[in-house]
Length: 278
Image 1 (cartoon, helix red, strand yellow):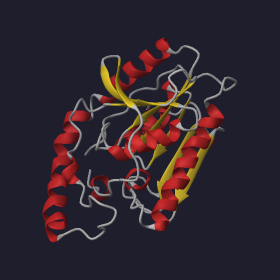
Image 2: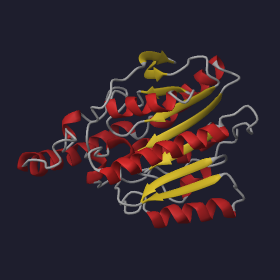
Image 3: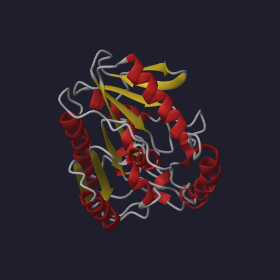
C-alpha cells in the first residue's frame, strides 16, 4: 500500500461531537442520533480510527437526518496516530519541511505494521457488530459506509447489510471482492486516485450491472483526491463542496434503502477472496 493521501489531510475544527461512547458486543464505539431509530448506519473509519474528530462530526451529520449512527473501533486501539497527518490545521495549508519530509515518510512506514496488525481482524469484528445490532434491533435496517480502509468492507461485506456506500476505498482485491456485493451499493471516488480511480469505478459499475444488480450508483468527483470525504481542507471551496456533496450522496442512498419497504439484506456469503498485498 503506497498512498500518501491515505495519511494526509486536515483536522476539522468546525464543531464538537454530540454523541457518546458505548459498547457494541463489548467493542468500543461512538454512537450518535436517536437510539430508537429503525435506520442504523455503521461507519468503517479510515486509518485514523473511531476517535478521529472528523469522522465523529460526519457521523453527527448523518444522525441529524434521523439515523442512529455507530462508529466502532475496528482497530482495537491500533489506529494510526494523529501526528501522521501532514497538515493539522485547515488554516495552515503549507506543511513545514519537517512535516513534509520527515513526518510523511514516517507515516507511510507505519502503514505496513498497521496493515499486518489489522487486515485479518476486520471481517470478524464487523460480523460480530452486525449480529449484535440485528439482535438488539430486529426491525431496523442497517447500512454501512466505509472510508478509505473501511471502504473495502463496504464492497466485500455488502451482503451483510441492507445497503452500503464505499468512499474512496483502498486495498480492494479487484474484481474478486465485488462478489460480496449482493444488494444496494453506492461508490464515491476521486477522478484521480491510486487506490480506486475513475476507470476502476466505471468498470465496477459495468461488472455489477452485467450481473443483474440494479441498485448500483457510481459518482466520480473532480478536483478532489483520495480521502477528501473525511479529511478535506474545508478552507478550499472545491474540496469543501466535494465533501458536502459526498455527504449528501451517503444520506440520499440510505434514505432510499434503509426503509421498511426495502428488500431484506442478502444472506448468502460469497467465497472468500485472498488477502490483498500491501
